[in-house]
Image (cartoon, rainbow over all chains, first blue to last red; front, side, top):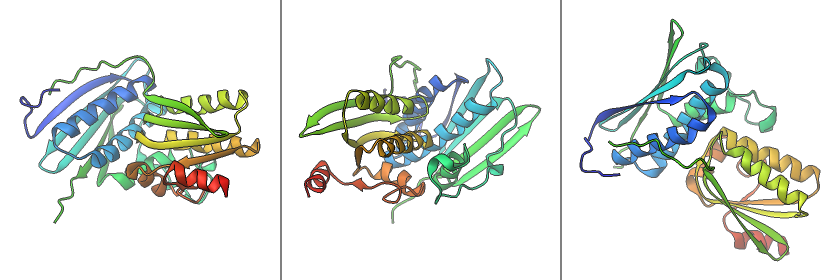
Length: 146
Length: 125
Protein backbone atom coordinates (compact mmCIF):
# COMPACT_ATOMS: atom_id res chain seq x y z
CA UNK A 1 0.00 0.00 0.00
CA UNK A 2 1.26 3.47 -0.89
CA UNK A 3 1.46 5.87 1.99
CA UNK A 4 1.93 9.16 0.19
CA UNK A 5 -1.71 9.72 -0.68
CA UNK A 6 -2.93 9.03 2.85
CA UNK A 7 -4.40 11.88 4.81
CA UNK A 8 -3.48 12.09 8.50
CA UNK A 9 -7.10 11.97 9.47
CA UNK A 10 -9.99 10.62 7.55
CA UNK A 11 -12.95 8.35 7.35
CA UNK A 12 -12.76 5.07 5.47
CA UNK A 13 -15.95 3.22 4.68
CA UNK A 14 -16.42 -0.28 3.33
CA UNK A 15 -19.31 -2.66 2.99
CA UNK A 16 -18.98 -6.41 3.54
CA UNK A 17 -21.24 -9.40 3.02
CA UNK A 18 -22.77 -10.47 6.32
CA UNK A 19 -20.99 -13.84 6.49
CA UNK A 20 -18.14 -15.42 8.46
CA UNK A 21 -15.82 -15.43 5.43
CA UNK A 22 -15.85 -11.62 5.56
CA UNK A 23 -14.13 -11.53 8.95
CA UNK A 24 -10.53 -11.78 7.64
CA UNK A 25 -11.25 -9.14 4.98
CA UNK A 26 -12.75 -6.82 7.59
CA UNK A 27 -9.71 -7.33 9.84
CA UNK A 28 -7.34 -6.55 6.94
CA UNK A 29 -9.26 -3.34 6.33
CA UNK A 30 -9.03 -2.25 9.98
CA UNK A 31 -5.35 -3.16 10.13
CA UNK A 32 -4.54 -1.13 7.03
CA UNK A 33 -6.29 1.95 8.38
CA UNK A 34 -4.53 1.55 11.73
CA UNK A 35 -1.12 1.11 10.10
CA UNK A 36 -1.64 4.09 7.81
CA UNK A 37 -2.60 6.20 10.84
CA UNK A 38 0.62 5.25 12.61
CA UNK A 39 -1.06 3.18 15.32
CA UNK A 40 1.27 0.49 16.64
CA UNK A 41 0.72 -3.25 16.22
CA UNK A 42 -0.56 -3.84 19.78
CA UNK A 43 -3.12 -1.06 19.37
CA UNK A 44 -4.17 -2.55 16.07
CA UNK A 45 -4.31 -6.04 17.63
CA UNK A 46 -6.74 -4.86 20.32
CA UNK A 47 -8.97 -3.03 17.85
CA UNK A 48 -9.03 -6.04 15.52
CA UNK A 49 -10.08 -8.37 18.34
CA UNK A 50 -12.93 -5.99 19.22
CA UNK A 51 -14.06 -5.63 15.61
CA UNK A 52 -13.92 -9.42 15.15
CA UNK A 53 -16.08 -9.95 18.25
CA UNK A 54 -18.62 -7.30 17.25
CA UNK A 55 -18.91 -8.53 13.65
CA UNK A 56 -18.98 -12.21 14.63
CA UNK A 57 -21.92 -11.53 16.95
CA UNK A 58 -23.71 -9.68 14.16
CA UNK A 59 -22.98 -12.42 11.61
CA UNK A 60 -23.97 -15.26 13.95
CA UNK A 61 -27.13 -13.76 15.42
CA UNK A 62 -28.28 -10.55 13.84
CA UNK A 63 -27.96 -10.60 10.08
CA UNK A 64 -30.90 -10.19 7.80
CA UNK A 65 -30.35 -12.74 5.01
CA UNK A 66 -28.27 -11.30 2.17
CA UNK A 67 -27.55 -8.09 4.04
CA UNK A 68 -24.31 -6.22 4.47
CA UNK A 69 -22.23 -4.93 7.32
CA UNK A 70 -21.07 -1.40 6.75
CA UNK A 71 -17.93 -0.41 8.58
CA UNK A 72 -16.47 3.03 8.80
CA UNK A 73 -13.17 3.72 10.47
CA UNK A 74 -12.17 7.20 11.45
CA UNK A 75 -8.84 8.29 12.78
CA UNK A 76 -8.90 11.61 14.54
CA UNK A 77 -5.78 12.71 16.38
CA UNK A 78 -5.20 9.78 18.73
CA UNK A 79 -8.74 8.42 18.47
CA UNK A 80 -9.53 5.35 16.44
CA UNK A 81 -13.28 5.22 15.88
CA UNK A 82 -15.00 2.20 14.37
CA UNK A 83 -18.69 2.37 13.45
CA UNK A 84 -20.43 -0.86 12.48
CA UNK A 85 -23.88 -0.70 10.88
CA UNK A 86 -26.19 -3.51 9.92
CA UNK A 87 -29.87 -4.15 9.37
CA UNK A 88 -31.23 -6.94 11.53
CA UNK A 89 -32.41 -7.93 14.95
CA UNK A 90 -31.43 -5.40 17.59
CA UNK A 91 -28.40 -6.53 19.55
CA UNK A 92 -27.13 -4.45 22.39
CA UNK A 93 -23.80 -5.72 23.69
CA UNK A 94 -24.50 -3.73 26.87
CA UNK A 95 -27.24 -6.22 27.75
CA UNK A 96 -24.91 -9.23 27.60
CA UNK A 97 -24.00 -10.20 31.13
CA UNK A 98 -20.40 -10.11 32.21
CA UNK A 99 -19.01 -13.62 32.04
CA UNK A 100 -17.80 -15.43 35.12
CA UNK A 101 -14.18 -15.78 34.02
CA UNK A 102 -13.56 -18.39 36.68
CA UNK A 103 -15.85 -20.77 34.80
CA UNK A 104 -14.42 -23.04 32.10
CA UNK A 105 -14.69 -21.22 28.76
CA UNK A 106 -17.08 -23.75 27.27
CA UNK A 107 -19.53 -23.25 30.15
CA UNK A 108 -19.72 -19.50 29.77
CA UNK A 109 -22.55 -17.70 28.03
CA UNK A 110 -22.07 -17.65 24.25
CA UNK A 111 -21.12 -14.18 23.09
CA UNK A 112 -20.36 -13.09 26.63
CA UNK A 113 -16.60 -13.47 26.38
CA UNK A 114 -16.42 -11.55 23.12
CA UNK A 115 -18.37 -8.63 24.54
CA UNK A 116 -16.25 -8.76 27.69
CA UNK A 117 -13.06 -8.52 25.60
CA UNK A 118 -14.52 -5.61 23.58
CA UNK A 119 -15.27 -3.73 26.79
CA UNK A 120 -11.77 -4.38 28.12
CA UNK A 121 -9.97 -3.48 24.91
CA UNK A 122 -11.90 -0.40 23.79
CA UNK A 123 -12.26 2.88 25.70
CA UNK A 124 -15.85 3.58 24.72
CA UNK A 125 -18.68 1.55 23.20
CA UNK A 126 -22.05 2.97 22.16
CA UNK A 127 -24.99 1.17 20.69
CA UNK A 128 -28.13 2.44 19.00
CA UNK A 129 -30.91 0.70 17.13
CA UNK A 130 -33.58 2.46 15.11
CA UNK A 131 -36.01 1.02 12.55
CA UNK A 132 -33.97 -2.15 12.25
CA UNK A 133 -30.66 -0.36 11.74
CA UNK A 134 -28.11 -1.26 14.40
CA UNK A 135 -25.24 1.13 14.93
CA UNK A 136 -22.32 0.13 17.14
CA UNK A 137 -19.59 2.70 17.74
CA UNK A 138 -16.31 1.79 19.43
CA UNK A 139 -13.51 4.18 20.28
CA UNK A 140 -9.96 3.48 21.35
CA UNK A 141 -7.60 6.31 22.18
CA UNK A 142 -3.88 6.07 21.61
CA UNK A 143 -1.93 6.40 24.83
CA UNK A 144 0.83 8.94 24.55
CA UNK A 145 3.93 7.78 26.36
CA UNK A 146 5.25 10.46 28.71
CA UNK B 1 -6.29 4.91 1.17
CA UNK B 2 -6.51 2.20 -1.42
CA UNK B 3 -8.00 -0.86 0.12
CA UNK B 4 -8.59 -3.80 -2.17
CA UNK B 5 -10.71 -6.51 -0.67
CA UNK B 6 -8.68 -9.19 -2.33
CA UNK B 7 -7.56 -12.12 -0.33
CA UNK B 8 -6.88 -15.68 -1.29
CA UNK B 9 -9.76 -17.97 -0.58
CA UNK B 10 -7.50 -20.04 1.66
CA UNK B 11 -7.38 -19.89 5.41
CA UNK B 12 -5.88 -17.04 7.38
CA UNK B 13 -4.40 -19.53 9.83
CA UNK B 14 -1.17 -21.29 8.89
CA UNK B 15 0.13 -24.32 10.74
CA UNK B 16 3.67 -25.63 10.29
CA UNK B 17 4.42 -29.09 11.62
CA UNK B 18 7.75 -30.37 12.88
CA UNK B 19 8.62 -33.55 14.72
CA UNK B 20 11.11 -33.25 17.57
CA UNK B 21 11.85 -36.26 19.74
CA UNK B 22 8.40 -37.79 20.28
CA UNK B 23 6.64 -34.42 20.15
CA UNK B 24 4.73 -32.87 17.30
CA UNK B 25 5.50 -29.16 17.24
CA UNK B 26 2.70 -27.11 15.67
CA UNK B 27 3.72 -23.54 14.89
CA UNK B 28 0.68 -21.36 14.32
CA UNK B 29 0.90 -18.13 12.40
CA UNK B 30 -1.60 -15.66 11.02
CA UNK B 31 -5.04 -15.24 12.47
CA UNK B 32 -7.24 -17.27 14.82
CA UNK B 33 -10.50 -15.54 14.00
CA UNK B 34 -14.01 -16.95 13.94
CA UNK B 35 -13.54 -18.11 10.35
CA UNK B 36 -10.20 -19.89 10.89
CA UNK B 37 -10.29 -21.11 14.50
CA UNK B 38 -12.13 -24.37 13.67
CA UNK B 39 -9.16 -25.34 11.50
CA UNK B 40 -6.94 -25.64 14.55
CA UNK B 41 -9.45 -28.05 16.10
CA UNK B 42 -9.59 -30.00 12.84
CA UNK B 43 -5.79 -30.12 12.51
CA UNK B 44 -5.38 -31.54 16.02
CA UNK B 45 -8.14 -34.11 15.38
CA UNK B 46 -6.29 -35.28 12.26
CA UNK B 47 -3.01 -35.62 14.12
CA UNK B 48 -4.68 -37.47 17.00
CA UNK B 49 -6.18 -39.86 14.47
CA UNK B 50 -2.68 -40.26 13.03
CA UNK B 51 -1.43 -41.43 16.42
CA UNK B 52 0.26 -38.32 17.81
CA UNK B 53 0.11 -38.07 21.59
CA UNK B 54 2.47 -35.25 22.56
CA UNK B 55 1.76 -31.81 21.12
CA UNK B 56 3.64 -28.55 21.45
CA UNK B 57 1.71 -25.59 20.09
CA UNK B 58 3.68 -22.43 19.43
CA UNK B 59 1.61 -19.23 19.29
CA UNK B 60 4.49 -16.78 18.95
CA UNK B 61 3.58 -15.77 15.42
CA UNK B 62 -0.16 -15.38 15.79
CA UNK B 63 -1.22 -11.87 14.84
CA UNK B 64 -4.85 -12.22 15.87
CA UNK B 65 -6.74 -14.17 18.52
CA UNK B 66 -10.43 -13.67 19.24
CA UNK B 67 -12.81 -15.43 21.63
CA UNK B 68 -13.51 -17.97 18.88
CA UNK B 69 -9.79 -18.79 18.88
CA UNK B 70 -9.76 -19.02 22.67
CA UNK B 71 -12.73 -21.33 22.57
CA UNK B 72 -11.06 -23.65 20.03
CA UNK B 73 -7.96 -23.84 22.24
CA UNK B 74 -10.13 -24.84 25.21
CA UNK B 75 -12.12 -27.37 23.19
CA UNK B 76 -8.87 -28.96 21.99
CA UNK B 77 -7.43 -29.07 25.49
CA UNK B 78 -10.53 -30.74 26.85
CA UNK B 79 -10.30 -33.42 24.18
CA UNK B 80 -6.56 -33.92 24.74
CA UNK B 81 -7.09 -34.38 28.44
CA UNK B 82 -10.03 -36.78 27.99
CA UNK B 83 -7.84 -38.91 25.69
CA UNK B 84 -4.96 -38.76 28.22
CA UNK B 85 -2.67 -37.10 25.69
CA UNK B 86 -0.45 -34.09 26.34
CA UNK B 87 -0.39 -30.63 24.88
CA UNK B 88 1.84 -27.71 25.83
CA UNK B 89 1.39 -24.12 24.69
CA UNK B 90 4.15 -21.65 24.02
CA UNK B 91 3.67 -17.93 23.74
CA UNK B 92 6.07 -15.11 24.27
CA UNK B 93 3.66 -13.03 22.20
CA UNK B 94 2.55 -10.14 24.43
CA UNK B 95 -0.60 -9.41 22.46
CA UNK B 96 -1.77 -13.01 22.58
CA UNK B 97 -0.86 -13.29 26.26
CA UNK B 98 -2.81 -10.11 27.04
CA UNK B 99 -5.95 -11.73 25.61
CA UNK B 100 -5.32 -14.95 27.57
CA UNK B 101 -4.92 -12.93 30.76
CA UNK B 102 -8.09 -10.90 30.16
CA UNK B 103 -10.06 -14.07 29.55
CA UNK B 104 -8.75 -15.48 32.81
CA UNK B 105 -7.14 -18.55 31.23
CA UNK B 106 -3.46 -17.55 31.35
CA UNK B 107 -1.64 -20.09 33.53
CA UNK B 108 -4.95 -20.95 35.19
CA UNK B 109 -6.79 -23.24 32.79
CA UNK B 110 -3.55 -24.23 31.10
CA UNK B 111 0.11 -23.36 31.35
CA UNK B 112 1.84 -21.19 28.82
CA UNK B 113 5.55 -21.63 28.39
CA UNK B 114 7.86 -18.92 27.13
CA UNK B 115 9.87 -21.07 24.74
CA UNK B 116 10.18 -24.52 23.19
CA UNK B 117 13.30 -25.07 25.29
CA UNK B 118 11.25 -24.50 28.45
CA UNK B 119 8.72 -27.10 27.33
CA UNK B 120 11.34 -29.71 26.43
CA UNK B 121 13.05 -29.09 29.75
CA UNK B 122 9.72 -29.67 31.50
CA UNK B 123 8.99 -32.84 29.48
CA UNK B 124 12.41 -34.32 30.20
CA UNK B 125 12.33 -33.50 33.90
